[in-house]
Length: 154
Image (cartoon, rainbow, N blue to C red; front, side, top):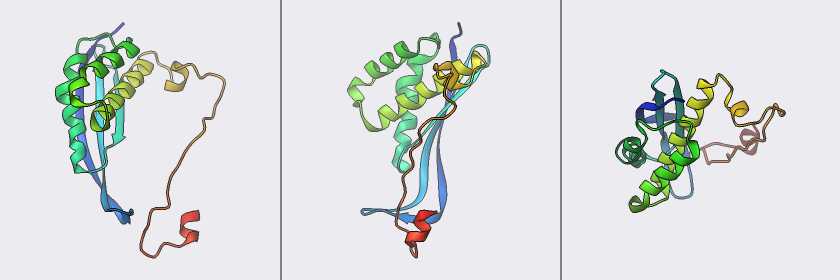
C-alpha cells in the first residue's frame, strides 16, 4: 500500500479556433483544471475537468487549499474513504459547482494512480474485464457563424 506524497494542480485556458456562441454568452476559450497526484513510490495519476470560465480557477483553489491538505500522507487505496473525507471537508464551502469538480478530479487522479500502481488499465482495475467497449456520449450543435446542418452532421 502506498501513501499520497504530492498533489499538483493547474488551471489552463485553451483558445478556441472558432468562437462559439450559446443563448447567453460567447465562448472564446475553454478553461480546464488539471491535477497530478503522486504516491511515495513515484507513481502518478492524472485528473482533469472543464471548469467553464476563468472563474473556474476557484476549482484550483479548492484543490490546493481545501482538499489536498486532507489527502497528503493518506493511503491511496482508501478511494471511497478519501472521497467521503473530501466531501465532509467541503461542507462549509458548498457541495456543488467548483468544489465538487475539485473532488471529482482528485478522485479520478487517485483511481488513475492506483490503477497505474497495479500496472492495469483503469477499466480493468475497476473490474471491467469482459467488455472491450463502453457507451459514449457527445454533445454539440453550438452556434457558429456560417454553420449549416451539414456542418453539424460532421
